Length: 95
Image (cartoon, one colour):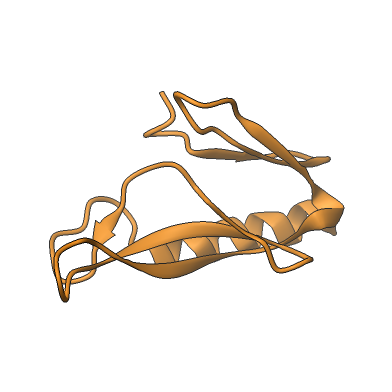
């Protein structure tokens, strides 16, 4: 299930699992880094942190999975820690 495995980093690229949509594959040479963006909801003043994959051309692709409310409870790693963990893995894969 994509909720628990939103992406996979392999020797040739990153696969983003986007159930119920099709998964997408980004070749490693196009991958810049993982980052976190704030998304506003329809409720005024409520924001969510979302993990995104940033490509070398500046495109931000949302990573499917849990969205963490910035002022609420967090389950598992916070998005910024998860982004750093994934970036470390990309660095090791590219090197």
